[in-house]
Length: 239
Length: 286
Ligand SMILES: Nc1ncnc2c1ncn2[C@@H]1O[C@H](COP(=O)(O)OP(=O)(O)OP(=O)(O)O)[C@@H](O)[C@H]1O
Ligand SMILES: [Mg+2]
Image 1 (spheres, rainbow over the protein chains, first blue to last red):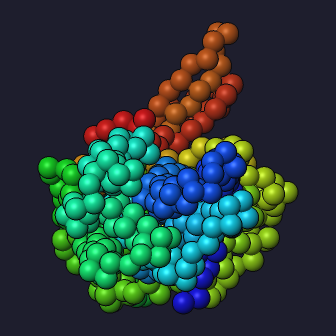
Image 2: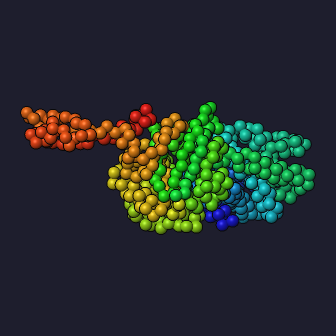
């Protein structure tokens, strides 16, 4: 436990030093500026999309950036020479990623409240964000481990987005009819949208939420256990 | 004396590669010695170090660490070993001291960071970001990193590569001292200077196979041409003659040369470690 705390503090400290946290804050601030330019109704409509973009996309990009920076610098080797376990390392990376998502969600929520008086059930949103961000940390690690460097990871991410994220976005904009939602939950991005949307709109479809949460948890477990964990050490040390 | 490491018929293949990189090597590293693994570039030295430090797994053969299976070592193993890498392994955007404090914070047995950094001349540069360090400074910081936990066994991959003679000497002195205090060192290198000055025993690694283990002295005796080369001044030019070292006491020609001529230099013609390297490995040093 002590190791996890130390590793996590190190990760979060480096998020700042490596300008990953500032970049995340800057994108969040751009949203917030946007809030001033739209009406409250529009803002309420768009809120799930803002939160969605952050969890489903930004978290993967930022995790990939930090992973490839570390790999390039060779620091993962040095960390692997510490008396810590690989699980502790992966847990701390996941927590750092959750921290980034949470930070954006909190700032977005505060801005929405002060600019447009929009509120929603924060506890439920928090729970959903946490579940979804663990799964997306796993997806981020997966894409990182299967890419040679950050730019090739962005290439893979494009494909991922085309298959999973863009359709969910179309769904969010109402381009894809709602009757396909259940089917679309096969996309992790759609799960994020469904969860965030129900928390913000305060409309809960038990079946869909159960499926989305179950899928996120299943994805986290399977990816970490069978892909990320076995591949992490090997991929982190070869340059 | 106990063996720190016993390696029996080790083979290793990188998952992405077609053939074995390490092709059945057997050797041991005794407690309290400096063991040198030598070999040309690409021979498999760093790979061997990465296997012994548990960075690479999936090897075949048996490796024991103080008589226990290396595969069964938990992460407490890393409390006991110190690892110096050939490539820089530090967070560039953090200062040197931030890097050291971070890594040090995980160890139970902590070395004095200030002492180590002062010794290698980095203390005054501790508040500089590592990204702004020169190559030699990064190498020295890598060495400090490897000593942070007062390790029982120290692994050093090309530890003096890229250092000026003064700093190379400082590091070598520290390694010798570390051994004096009971430490065990596994060192990989292709720098013959390091070997002659530091190693108790050495083994040559060539294309993933290992020759016999010997000492620098034995190698010199075995491969060295024992002869004496005398350079002397004659008719306004430098002349040279070579004599067999054996029976030199009775060699009249040698003695009269010494008496009659103005001698400039006398060298015993032991084959240098460089030459031996080339003879043994069949490859020139880069
Ligand atoms: N991650 C990797 N994946 C596949 N092959 C590798 C990898 N790392 C090294 N190799 C190969 O393994 C062989 C041995 O490499 P290694 O780094 O152990 O050599 P070395 O003896 O340390 O050389 P040098 O003196 O240049 O450091 C080389 O042929 C190299 O191409
Ligand atoms: Mg090497």
